[in-house]
Structure formats: C-alpha cells, structure tokens
Length: 397
Image 1 (cartoon, one colour):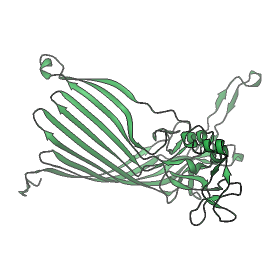
Image 2: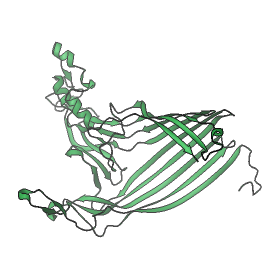
Image 3: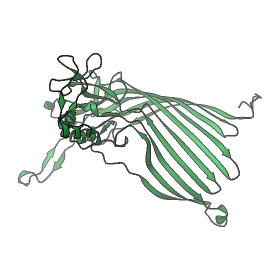
Image 4: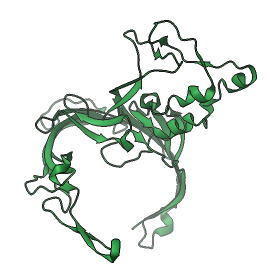
C-alpha cells in the first residue's frame, strides 16, 4: 500500500501487515444436565433392578458459556523474507461458565449445575524466524516462539469467592479459582514458620505443620517458548524442536509416598551414620516454645516419615526444557515422478519426547498429571512418559 502511495520504502523491507480481530464464541453444556434423568442398575439384592437420580442437580435455565475476545497483531518481513517476526496481543473474557457447585445433601443432591464465573486472559505471542543460509544446495531455517499469558478470576457465583477445581483424595491441597487471583492457584498446608521465616520445630524434634492452606504458586507456567531448526542439503532434511516451559508449580503425591517410605535417593543421607554411630538427623529450625535452635536428633524413619501429609514440602517447580522432536528426512528426486500422478515422496525417521536439557521436577515429567480437566498442578501415581520413534511417509499428488 505504501508503494502505491509513492512512499519511499527501503529495498530491504519486504512488507509489514497490521491486523485486528474481534470474536465471540459459545460453548454448550453436556447431555443430561438440563432435566433430571434416571439411570438403572441391575443385580441388586434379591435380583431387583433399581432406578436412581444423578447426584448433581440439573438446571433447565443453564446458558451457554460465552467467550469474547479481541487481538491486535503486527507482522513484518525483511531482506526478501529471510528475516521476520509476528507479534500478537490478545484479551479474552469468558463468562457464564458451567460449574458444579456443592450443595446441602438435604436437597437430595450433593451438587448443582449453575452459570458462574468471569475470567480474563490476556497475553502476548511472538514468533521470530530467520533464514541464515540460503544457497542452491543448502537451506537453514530457524524459528523462535514465545508466549506469555496473564489470567485473573474476576467473579464467581454470588457469595462465593473461591471455587475448588481439585482436591485429590481429600488431602490438604486445593487447586482453586479465587476472585482477584490468577486461575489455578495451588493452596496447601506446609511447615509452620515464624515472622522471620524460620521453620518451627516441636519438642519432639519434628517440624510443626501449619494447617492453614496457603498459596504455593500457580499451576500454569510463567511463559512458554520453543526453538525449531530445519537444515536442508539437496534432498536431505534434518530438523529439531526444543520446547521450554518456565515457571509453574506441581504437587508430587508419588514423591511424598515414596520418600516417607524411604524409597528414594533423597532419604539416604543420615542412614549409615545413624545405624553405625547412633547419630540422628536434626530438623533445621527453631523450637516453637523456646525460640532456640533445635537440637533433638531423629532416626531416619522418623525424620523422613514426618513429611507424609505435609503437602507443601512436595510442591515443585515445573520448569523444564526438552528435546521435543528430531526428524531426518529424504525427499526423493522429483524427476522420478515426471510421468506419474505423484508430485513427490518424502520418507522421514522421527523421534519424539527424547530427553530433557533441564527438568526441575525430580524424577517425573511435568506433563504427567492426574486430570485432563482445567485442574492441573497435581500428580497422583502417574505413569512414566514415553519416548516415541517412528517413520513417516508423505506422498503428494
């Protein structure tokens, strides 16, 4: 457009595009949530069949969830497309979310469906790509992606400022949506501390647990990013993708169970010394009654076993950087298909989820979680993640 207006544009400036968009979408509820329906069960006492109502009360006045949002973007390319970026800023608000709210059992139901909640998400996305090498036989493309999201719970139902997304097995942990806070805050109990942050120890030599649930962080990452590279030489392509998830927290229930049973490497310190010399382990902190440094020695079983049920002790950062994918492919010469319907064939060997460059979560993959719902940040006996290897055959016509 600038060229048509006779504006002098540098030769290295390929193009720039500004965009904007606004959209509103709806999301319906699942089946059988508007009116009561009965389910049947056979093989009861005496061979009788029974019919039961659902435990959650339906609501015929439910409205669809609504998400409204707008975004503004700027895309530019330079040096005949060899360098460019794409920047996006977005702002989305979701309201009338359909949730199951606990209710008095005297109503005949343990919960009810309602429309509630208003959550705002805003953030930025940046993609930068560059072609540092481009010759007849060689081509090298690099791309970097960065995404950061800020969420905030604006409102819930009348009279409610906290909605529990997850409370696994009734433990002292809650993943919540709380008015005024980011979505997905993790609240747990923890070791009690004084005003100066010193850990408090009882007369028995064990840490004192603070029963009040306090925020340990958020289940969502501070930001995510990736780096991809594709190097081509004649018909060969070698590419890789590195993923980064920076920040975020997760509760490892498996680690709590394993450590309290002495089944992890972290429980080795102090064992040999105690069973050979009788010298025990000492909790680092101040006596809750005297304010003096703790000197009471504990045997390894008592020391490591005291953390069972202390959820905050097992909340870890989920920061990780991994090799997401490596691919080696070969494009068969196009002249082989000049007299056929096939335009090209590419055969590739691919490996996915290969290894971590860095993982702050001890012994576990941060992508392992006990739920696929909105409630993340909790691990419960998760199966190990897997590496995957395979071959791809792409045929174009």
